[in-house]
Length: 336
Image 1 (cartoon, rainbow, N blue to C red):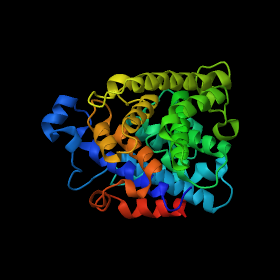
Image 2: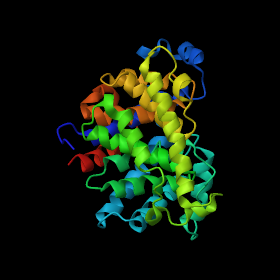
Image 3: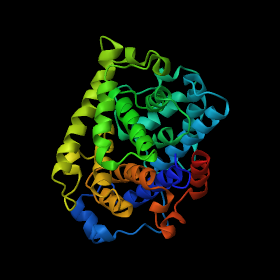
């Protein structure tokens, strides 16, 4: 990763900025947002720039990965313990008051026990809570493709065990990684599609254990393929939407409202790829959507920041984002 670009710092700050920009517009349709905020291309970062559970859980995952990698080679057992502890700490934190999703709350309550994590996983849930927080997996240095995929899916499975949540998290981390490495945005959707096809029946036993047996699938391959197939469908919708780009139309109409994992990924990519070299415009477009605007904008910021680096964001915005010092500390670790 290019240290001068500082992709990790750019991605983490962008993620938090998108989260803060989309927080006040979540649960509103576009006409209501325009009424409240004025023209979408002029949306301003709120004062103060408060984030949601999306950024809080990204930081929790980032701390967990940092702890795991400080202990040696990243393995499933080495990752699961500190990330689980961080998620439980987040669950009990007085700052956990930002309307988090039900799946995260239920799963984290169950993780606060001595049961295996698979028993806490909500295998019916594919909410975007799985992948809104996964960017650190794409930014951490020195992981093999297998480690990155396994870690992305494991961190999802701690709360959201649905195969589509696992696949979407894997793809989201992959997108962040590719952009940070310098992949051109124009080729990104195609690369993600190839990656999905290549991994369609690959179940990561080492990382997921017996998770698949908790759903109603005849085999682990059948279980995970269900998730990849839903992601492939939404990537096709993304490619179709970008064939005739329409920046003034709500991106949710083309790629979905983003409450579920595969749509959060696709609609965030949609916003980013409409404006690959205008990161602030991409964030504003993402925040002015009828869907899960904070999560869509949070992922849009992660992609734009990984692509363009720390210089992508206005200094006046970056300086007043909540949790700034912790975001910068993690970013500096992975940019080194």
